[in-house]
Image 1 (tube, helix red, strand yellow):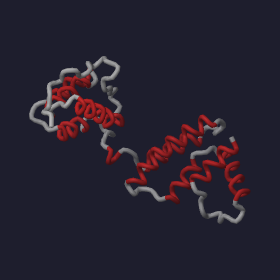
Image 2 (cartoon, rainbow, N blue to C red):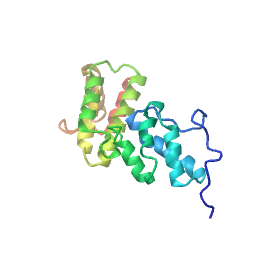
Image 3 (cartoon, rainbow, N blue to C red):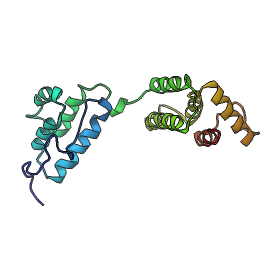
Image 4 (cartoon, rainbow, N blue to C red):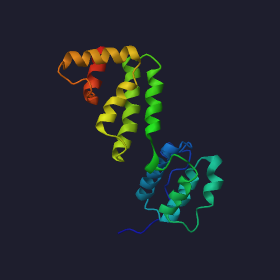
Length: 188
């Protein structure tokens, strides 16, 4: 087994392969993962990993991060830094309010292109998959919520298409997300 080395060979902060973080809270863990992977590649000691993370930090935040270089483990360092970026904590990344806000935003404009539908679908799934992983939303709620993100005209068209495909489907039961997805693409 090799022992940890110095930072010889680590890319500088402006190098194309250097980990980047722009201050967006939701991207902080991805930044930490990138630094960790690079540090593992170069077999850095934990203290060097922390020091390089600070070097890669946004310039406007670097001074603050420097307070956590000495005496911290990698795990504790990340926890302290996350506290400065509300919304970076993966345990509370998305809420039902985020889902409601997304569906309301999309429902206010026509769903008239596959590009717009794709953006909505990806944003919706990102939130819903997270909420499902935390047992905060059921499949039934997911299916009903997805339709609420469509403007009324498009929602009616999708509903008509679904009823034509499954005339015996009970009106009180929402259609499955995959069926709504297929019907939507058929219409667009």
